[in-house]
Image (cartoon, rainbow, N blue to C red):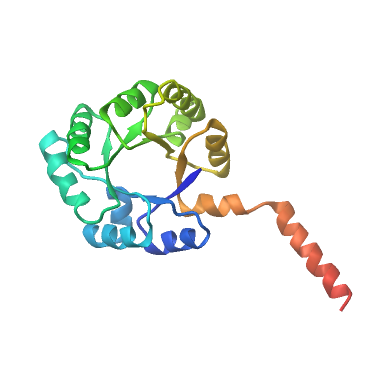
Length: 214
């Protein structure tokens, strides 16, 4: 399973890369703003840190605007994917990008119907959100299972399912169990995945025992 870093902070990405957990990076305007960096400067540097996809998002809501911004973003580095919310304009833009050889990721996906439209349009990646669904008492992982099952019916679908809005380590494990292609996670979730109280207590016990024999 692929691990994407959900961050625009270079140090976060470097730390994840050191752990072998930076198969790609997802960013959005909010993350770029929080990083305090110039948009192009940040995306260009991040694209040089990882070999996999770096998802960068235009802010326009029209087909013409998405195309203009997306073409510019894609020109910044060969591994930049244009990340677009799933809207009518987004679906239209994705098909044009595909013909131009520009790879795209459709985001803010909350049901299987949207996922089918994204695959039909030719999106390279979809980012269905699980945490936000859980927030409204709709099981996010049920959606991931449904999408993976639907896509498996059509071997010609090449769209990857990268689970987004991941809030905890259990989301990651469940995404893997569902057969998702990957997850995009913030650094705090990576930290959660490494932690277990029995691991901590075991280390303390080992050290205590070792000190007794010195």
